[in-house]
Length: 317
Image (cartoon, rainbow, N blue to C red; front, side):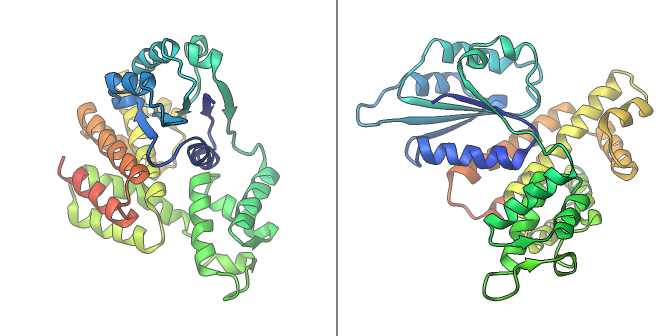
């Protein structure tokens, strides 16, 4: 089974990827690569190696947005095209849109494809939220689900993080799990809380250790897990990189703001950071996030320890 997955609904895509790994691999034969910093020789070796005692090998290749010219992907496509092994199950997990160049590749033409789109309207958003809540033994009424959608600006990872927190607070048999807006509003992170992620990235990038650790403590105490934090920090770094590229291309602030679509406070902070950080440092930060995300997927280190390890490395690089 070889599959290419893509789309904007990051939670559904991530959940599907986990199911794929559980079905086609296990802890002993699961291999994970990032396109951005991939070891081509190691990938080639994994693709062509064969173990007579191993029925199936699961290989996951993650595409982040930083490999904009798809240089590494072109090499990977060539390797896969020339080393098809029936014992391999390959999943390409793609961030961002599939451009015309990708549609010409062996992978696009020969892999099965699955797209994970966000809901198309408010009613679909609410159905999605209620379904996710139900899978966590919660019953959210229409208004509670709408409230969750509204304050998260339709962020599937953010919403799943809030539902995870609610499922811990309103455990079945301990409190009523048929929830209204009034039941949940005091337990949900406010938009102001979500904007703090930008301030956290600012403090990490600018080496403000005391402030950064204080904010990390708040996020951990609020129930924010590693996956949510690393995805949000990675998103902000990608936004900063995009802003820096546009500044260097000579775009004016109005054009950049229109392209990025950020609230004024977040936009001003993004521009400030984009002017101060180098592309080399952006690459280092991305590598640190990739390194710790891989540890999260392949090790038994606790989420809290990974969060503080990641922050420490950012503050010292």
